Length: 148
Ligand code: SF4
Image (cartoon, rainbow, N blue to C red; front, side, top):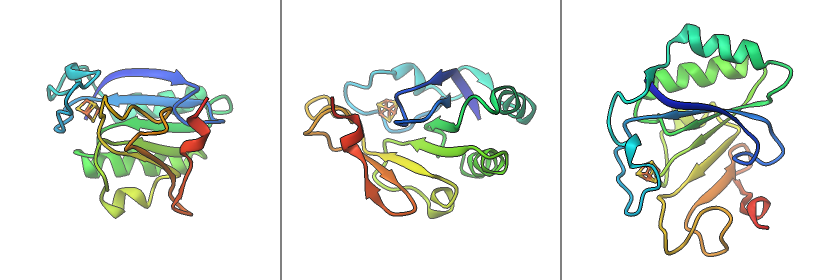
């Protein structure tokens, strides 16, 4: 799993301070993709377990959630990383362009964002979006939290 970018973010999961890992190798190729540099497999740096664990340790008590921007194409590795985050007391979230993901991944998520980017419909902050932000346990859609 290669990580193109790591940031601490405030808006991706409302109400949470999130450690956000952007994973390269996205196979979806949405028309008008805002980040086509993520299509290439292996761009960025390898996200080793040590580095990942060190980041989670460093931000413990400050950040509350771990978010993956993609990475579902590395199923086993993603599940292991989500499990580790949960074990450390973090909530978890995945942003995917897919409509559904493997239930084995979903079992380790607090929230899931689904749906391809469609520039005509807009993102989560648009009323016409095709994307969904879901609380996994209840299957409740929480898109309203993104509307301004
Ligand atoms: S899912 Fe995101 S990164 Fe992947 S092609 Fe679509 S917009 Fe680009």
